[in-house]
Structure formats: structure tokens, C-alpha cells
Length: 173
Ligand SMILES: Cc1cc2nc3c(=O)[nH]c(=O)nc-3n(C[C@H](O)[C@H](O)[C@H](O)COP(=O)(O)O)c2cc1C
Image 1 (cartoon, protein in one colour):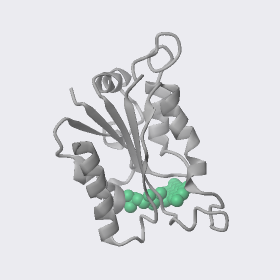
Image 2 (image 1 turned 30 degrees about the horizontal axis):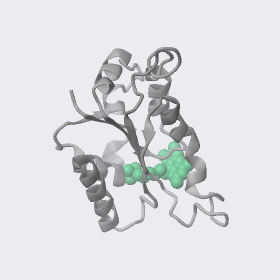
Image 3 (image 1 turned 90 degrees about the vertical axis):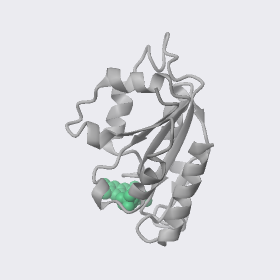
Image 4 (image 1 turned 180 degrees about the vertical axis):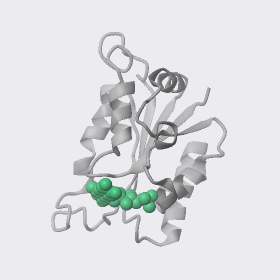
């Protein structure tokens, strides 16, 4: 069983610019289980037992996805709803994820400037993080400093390559 479980959620990976590079950078690492949610569950019919079993031996859980409407793509939200169950991930006896690290790796269409008071999104990006951060914390996970790649459509290839290299180095370490 892998020590690092990476849940990837991109509904159109073949059309992705950034997400694809990030995933390709970590796919071959030892002890890393990269699980494409849209690949596994195109009908949203999540195998909850398999997902929970994959997580149990992990010390690090990674959520890797593009930001959609200031949140996670719908299948990752459905995964939260289905997999992070009361009595398993939280609530009475729900300690399965407690003490594990959680790393959020997210790409955005908006650039850094757009996530400011005067920008299109009117708020810093950190204002949009709490629901995701607290999903992890509610399950007792330790929230690591997220990887945020802004402007995924327009940054140079080198910026994406650097972000991928940083992610790989962190997971390899
Ligand atoms: C349905 C949908 C909703 C989106 N919502 C946001 C958003 O709220 N904020 C943002 O910055 N980008 C948003 N985007 C842009 C995506 O985050 C962006 O296309 C993605 O991060 C680019 O990565 P990729 O090249 O791997 O697809 C949205 C895109 C789609 C398709």
C-alpha cells in the first residue's frame, strides 16, 4: 500500500495544460498511488471501500485539481461526501485520517493579480481556501502549505515545469 495517495480530479485531462504536467511529474515516484477520480468513476459511482482502503496506509493525502467555481470539481466534492464518512473520517470512532498530512495542489485560471481586492475575483485566493482546508482539518489531518499555480492558461511553460518540479521534490522527500 502506498504511503502517498494522490487524488486527481480533472474532467478533461486531455485538454489540460497545467494539471497534466503536474500529474506526469509524480506518476512514477515510488510509494505514490495516483488515483484519477474521473478516470475511475466516470459515472460518479465511487467505490467507497476501495477509496477508504487506499487511504488507510497513507501518511500523506494529496488533492490535485483545477479550481472550479471557487471550489473542487464536482467529482472530488462527491468523493468528500461519499468517502469521508461519519464514524470513519470524523465523528465517534472516526479516526482513519487523523494525523495524516494533507496537501492541496490547485491550478487556477485567474492570475495572481485577479485574486486581489481590485482584481476580478475581488479577494485574495486564501479567502477561498477555508472550506477545503477545514474539510481536511475536520478529519484530523494536518494541513500543509498548499501548492497554488495561478494563471494556468497563460503562464510560460517554464512556470508550470517549475511548479511540477517543486511538487515532485516535495513528494520524493
Ligand atoms: C467549470 C469551470 C469553473 C472554473 N472556475 C474557476 C474559478 O472559480 N477560478 C479560477 O481562477 N479559474 C476557474 N476556472 C479555470 C480553471 O481553474 C482552469 O481552466 C484550470 O486551472 C487550468 O488548468 P488545466 O490547464 O490543467 O486545465 C474554471 C474552469 C471551469 C471549466
